[in-house]
Amino acid sequence: MLKDRRKSVIFQPYRFSIAPMMDWTDRHCRVLHRTLTSRALLYTEMLTTGAVLHGDRERLLAYDPVEHPVALQLGGSEPADLAEAARIGEAEGYDEINLNVGCPSDRVQSGRFGACLMREPELVAECMAAIGAAVKVPATVKCRIGVDEQDPEESLFRLVDLCAAAGVRRFVVHARKAWLKGLSPKENRDVPPLDYPLVWRLKAERPALTIVINGGIGSLDEAERHLPHVDGVMLGRAAYHTPDLLGQADARIFGEAGTVTPFEAVERYRPYVARELAKGTHLAAMTRHMLGLFHGVPGARAWRRILTVEGVKAGAGLEVIDRALAEVSGLQEQGLARGLEAGEAA
Image (cartoon, rainbow, N blue to C red; front, side, top):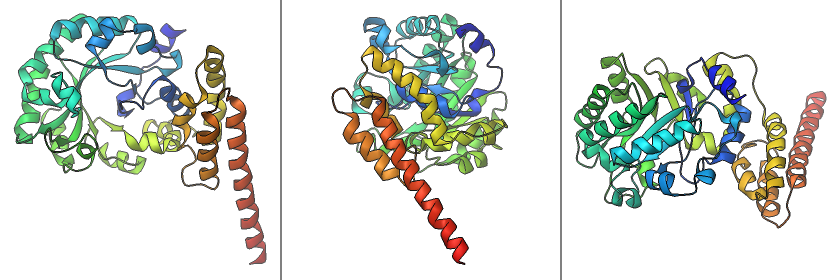
């Protein structure tokens, strides 16, 4: 079944993808997102080579077959270690191996990987050559446009050109610099100015490469505005905090028929939650990713409150989700009834 699912992925999933986000895009989150979009490319949280090579692989690399297409993002700077971690990821069935050259956290810098590697494009190319030689699935790079005092026009194009010479065909570019000193990881997601035209130019001047743009894109409307200029769009926080927008992605981005409502997503997620509960997974580990599903609609606050307060209690089960869903349904029905009454009165 897994093999059949991977062979059926003949579209271009990178056209719309959901960013790897530490502490957010775990396996439970990815399954929820897959209930909303069957087409989008999903990414794991970044895993260091040390964790993959020496950690609990069964736990760290676990995913549900429904997640395909799903990419494994690695963090590291030792070519041999990255090659071995990539082999392991491919053997586990991941559809892509991605190297993180964009994370700006202090912990990542001290380990000589992430955004600080923008200063060592030759090393990045060496790492990508090693990964590419080790696996048959695509080996890709996610990077910034530069760091600190670098000139983005020079740093971005040099990194891309060296990696392309090493065999990389696809790049995900966060259209911001990273300031490694003076800004926190959170500030690095907001403070450095976005330079979308530079990423568009990269695609225009390197047409043979697949360029995916990332950074500050908050809606499908914005995603669609980028697609004439690049090959794909990656959403991060918007996809996580307002996941209901993913229910329209297959129709709007991939031309599929139909959309998925938050109510339908909950119904699709329930069997997974039930299976995980039976394995001993805590309900809150799964429901924490659902908090934004009904963002902006009547009952959203009650939905969040019930999942947050009740979901963490010992023994919490599907009844918590059902109670929260009933609250949303009730408030929406009330709102619809009031609207009908107002219309009749008019």
